[in-house]
Figure 1: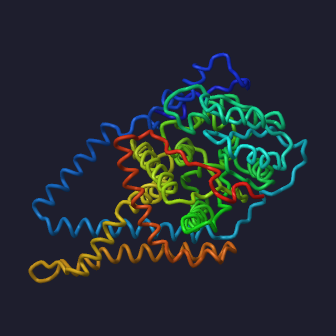
Figure 2: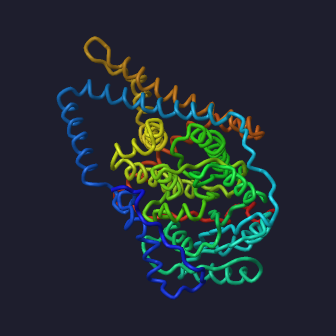
Figure 3: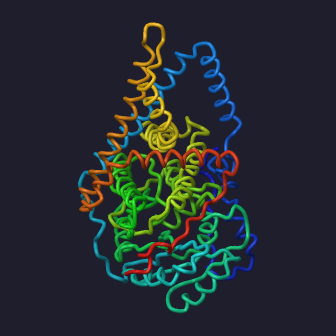
Length: 485
């Protein structure tokens, strides 16, 4: 199927209480699956993918039975090289992404020159942070705003606060009818049907965007090429000092949004989006089919789908500040959801590898596998490589002639030590380059952080098999800094 020939999702006149909620709810849930089924995560894995994985597994088991020592050494070596290649690609991206920017997307424009800008704010059980969010949005330096609070119909507490707040600004409360899956992308799709702006941005309930972010986005869109579909602002945290988890999460974001994503941008290859501060041309977003309600990292998937459909994403020189999880439990649930969504995204976009290659080119094809696939694989094999390395040091497994123990130690150690050296360097150098020197020492603990990521990856894999479309909600407003200016 040629995905370029699919009809765009419809555009409707905005209304708080549309006359046909069931029809619009059906569009939000099934629009992408109906028009572009090959790019929807509603099917977790296709028959062809399942057969391919089964054949590979059967061959691997047969080799392991016939030549167990060789098979184990080969597995460790391939895993080690894969881990080193994935982390090495991150280092390469950081070198490219760290180059100084020469863009001029901060050009000041007169108010008369600025179109309507739609802001979608999906909310679920966010009554406690909504007043603060409304104040932040009203401080944006932009005259023509269409702000939609997108609330699930049964979330009466949030809806009541939203109705009250809506009296004091350019706000509209959109009540999303009951439906399944109950996910953030489904809610955004529903609200997108009524977006009035030439441009649309997503903000989360705890976000604090820089005041001139929308002006910068309009300037960059108008200076950019016609195929520029989306701008991704940088994300950071305002509560980094509240503990080890927030500090490491801040370092993670600093590497991601200030080095890795800019590196992908400079290479012109598919870029997964962050979950907020994605700025879109509204017409192009509708043409793309909106978000996939079945993918729990709808942002990452949409970034890759943009590339699949011949458009591109670029970085925006502006920052939105968020609230980092302050407990391991909250962080673990959020990271598991992200990794599950990356698994969904990889499976969706590898259903037809040759089509992916044709649409994004050779560089894009390999970058997708190294960045999306590499993030998944590295998290899953990381503890396996550490365990093999430590046990080979302790027990020195030997074949006749003493070769296996040394080979296993070199193969596993080369991958984890070399890979974690790269990850540590990125975590230490990134805050130094961004003027956050106090965070740099915590970068030395990134190896422990990556072991926790591996723990989350196995939970994500379990959920992918048994509960693929479940959305683990992250609670906001729990930081003691969430109500501070």
